[in-house]
Length: 127
Image (cartoon, rainbow, N blue to C red; front, side, top):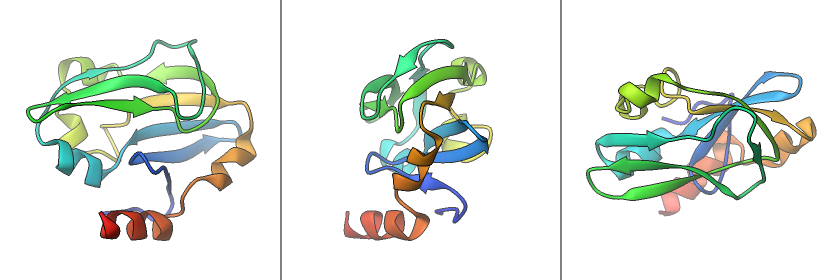
């Protein structure tokens, strides 16, 4: 499942524009299926500055621990507190209730440099 309205990264995160200068970020359905059952999520605090490609959190599953990377430069505006007590939302609803962080981006046009849904589908088909 790869929603057409979202943007994506090579690291299997999705990015949704929520306002002129803010985005919501999570991991893709493909990523959560590769991880297996998620048991713990570590996310950055609101106010933390992030840089593209920098690790900003971790997802621990029954199979492994994986870093979560910032897709864009900016400041974390919110984190999904629900994942603290219910990390399995990443498995059951990765594009909805399983969102991870919201970022106020330094350059809103940078969203357009991310992968389109078609590009992301090609990436995971080659995996």
